Image (cartoon, rainbow, N blue to C red; front, top):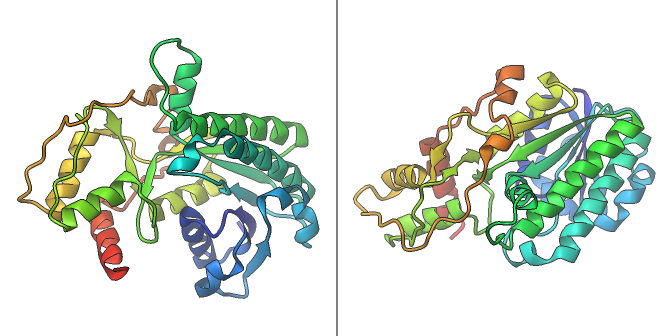
Length: 303
C-alpha cells in the first residue's frame, strides 16, 4: 500500500492502525472529529481530515487527492456502555458507513474494509431463531450487520473490492473504556476479586497492535470479497482467559465462577476463524501475558 484513508482515526483501534501504517511508510488520510487526537503522530505522510459523521457523505469534497489503495472504515459511535441500546444512533452509524463506500468510490479507492464485531454474529443468531432473549447489545450488533451488508452491496455495484473484518474483544494500551479486560485488570491490581459468570462459553481477546497488523494484512495479502476474522484460531473459554489474566496480575487470588449465569454463546461456526491465516499466514503475535502486562503498566501510569 502507498496511500489509504482511515475513518474513525482518533479512536482506540484507529490510532493504533494509523501508527502502524505510518511506520510502514504508508501515506494516511485520517478522518476524525478531533484533529488534536493524533498530535503525537505528526508526520509529512499524515493528513488530517476533520469531519462529523453527517459529513461523511461529502468526504470527496474534503479530500483533494484521488487514487487510494484502500479505505478502512472504523468510524462508529456508541461502541460500549449505554449507547449500545440507542437504536437511532446505531442505525445512523450504518447509514454513515454506506455513505463512506460511495465516497470511497468517488475518491478512487481500490478496496473498502468494513470493520465489524463478533456481536454481529450474536444478533444474526437471533434473526434465525425465535428462542431466547437478545441482549441489549444486539442493537449494536444488528446495526453492524446492516452496515456490513450495505457496504458489501454498494462496493460491488460501485466496482470496489470489499472485505469485512470481524473483531472480537480488543484490548491494549490507550483503551479507556470499561470493556471486560480493563475491568479485570483494575480488579486484580486492586486486590479485589471480580464477580464472574460461569465462563464456559468461547471467548477471544486480541491485543490492539495485532488487530492493526491484521487489518493491514487483509489489504496487502487478503482476497477481495471475503469476510475475515481478526483474532486467534484456537478459541478458549472465558474461564480459561480470566484464569490466565489472574495468573499475571494476582496469582494468589482465588476465583469464583458462576455468580452470574453465562449469556447466550457466540456461534463462532458462523464464520471461518482460520480464513485469514489460510489466505495470508497471519496470526496474532502478542501473547496474552505480554499484552496484559503492557496494558496494566499503562493503566497504572494514568492514575
